[in-house]
Image (cartoon, rainbow, N blue to C red; front, side, top):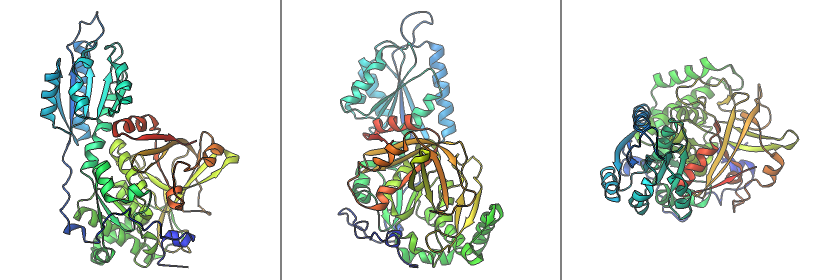
Length: 477
């Protein structure tokens, strides 16, 4: 068994295509030699109420009580989200709109709330001309302006509509809008090679399209951090994983110690480099020093997406969803059972807190990695039966593949495939399998295979986010 090969070499598909970095110039410098990334500040969002309140019993529009209720819900969301700053104003003219936008900043995304019939259509021009991503929240009977949002979007503006009486949708609007400035503050560390679609492999194109910085890390330098990991922190990590495991099957003490030391070192690396995302392109060669799978789970549970096998498409997908819903993703391989109308997802690393940081840990076993003779230490996470999930992957930086399903089976102990597994009932497994990755122009196995699973049905939010970010959505199955 090859202990230093990548997973692609292990599968016999070669690495030549995956190591191409889309023409980008990469340096394998220690990340701190580059300009240090800034810790996140709050994402500024402009909120504009257009028009003036109408009396309770007449006209098309929102009344003063509704407006106060919306302002109160926005104030609560700002406090609870903690990483957004709202710049609120009122506009009855294009000049007033321009003044509020100037206060918020030239790149601030905008939430508009119309409170009088046709007020928005008279004042929206500075927002559209300034290319501000815009969510339009429209209460029922608050005016007829809502019907122009899809027309503006069809003309190339980044606009989406939330037409609802539910004030909680205002928080969703803020979550959608904050993704864009948060991506611009993102710093991603990569242990090359990068894999995935060519645009996602290019740091220049990732920066241009999404605003995130991608920095290559030298593995030798990180090996020094592994050796330097504090013994007390390593012991605490060992205890955390072993005391809470349902069962420890293949791993011995040395396997667990190595994996725990790598986990601590990865956490230290992300803190030292002030980074918000990680992709490791050589993880299948890490067995001699300890697999990163426990560390990936720990990072994802703490809100830091971490991708296996250098898969930049999966990493960026995890980042978009993390910023949108504050939940980690389970990146995995797909395989079908059309007899059961089912799609499996399996991988040897998986987060425990799929409900988010305040949720409970999923139960898990400690196992050896399934593809290197059971050596090493990885989590076999047992996810929740009956849970609705969204399966997604951003490809080519401009298209989101997405579908939904329901978990119908989780093995008590996995046998075939990677350790963490879910079997999900899908809409049409036969159609899904026949059209799998048909929009991708590649023969690279990992790029075709991987998807990321998230708890909950987020298809509606995927479509809203795509409109705001100028992306397409391909619904699989």
